[in-house]
Amino acid sequence: MTFHVERIDHVVLRVRNLAGMVRFYEQALGFKVERTLDRLHLVQMRAGASMLDLVQAERPESGGNMDHLCFRIEPFDREAIAARLAPLGVAVGETVERYGAEGNGPSLYFDDPEGNQIELKGAAQ
Image (cartoon, rainbow, N blue to C red; front, side, top):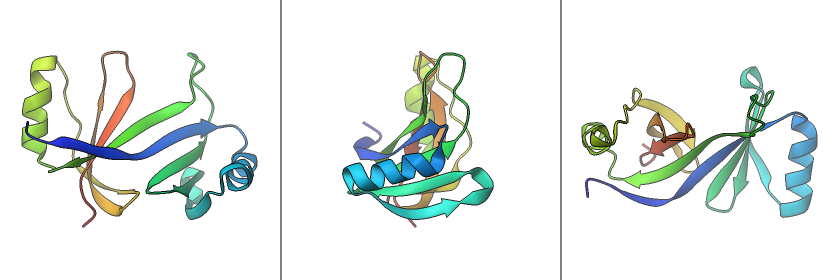
């Protein structure tokens, strides 16, 4: 194996009422707002060792509200990841520094066979 999944880093949900959903997760599960990015209409909430990201957005025609699922992997080696996924017909996106449950670190995106967007994220740097 070129890398292994350690845990879910974060899940991003598309929501219609951002403020209402933030209140719900604060009150129902005790999550705390960790970071807000107003320009993206995004609130990142601490969920134990993971994060729940809420982004104000319309849902796609399919009706789903998950934007993407992020797995924390070790080690993060873009070439090894691409080589492992290529035989499955999967092309990976560019590597970019993104914020996750541990802070900023390298990540890339790809789609699974049913079109779900998956992010693989390395350790915070």
